[in-house]
Image (cartoon, rainbow, N blue to C red; front, side, top):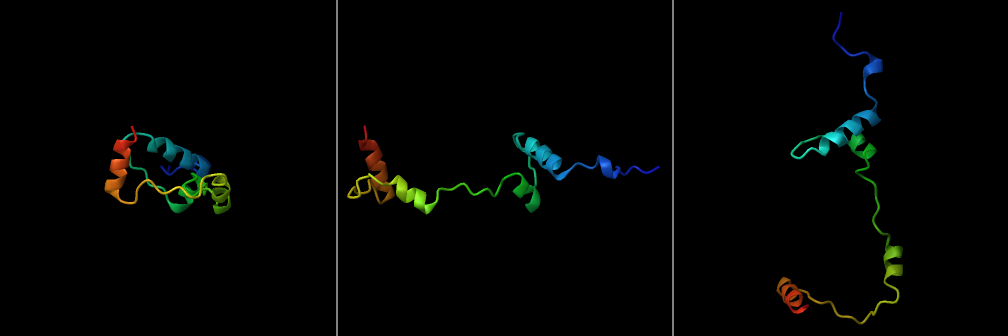
Length: 83
């Protein structure tokens, strides 16, 4: 008799990814995903705002407003003075 699992006992890619995602929720656990598993897990889903959506979102905003700060020190001073 052999100790190798039968082909029908091998987990599907979706089952394997689900197990790895569950393991990844354990604090301190290191779980490695190959590129196909990572893609199946949704690691490469692009959900950023498009440029057109960004331009549409800025409609109606005052275009003459100056930035609050340009340097780190100015940003800290602006935060302190915001109160």
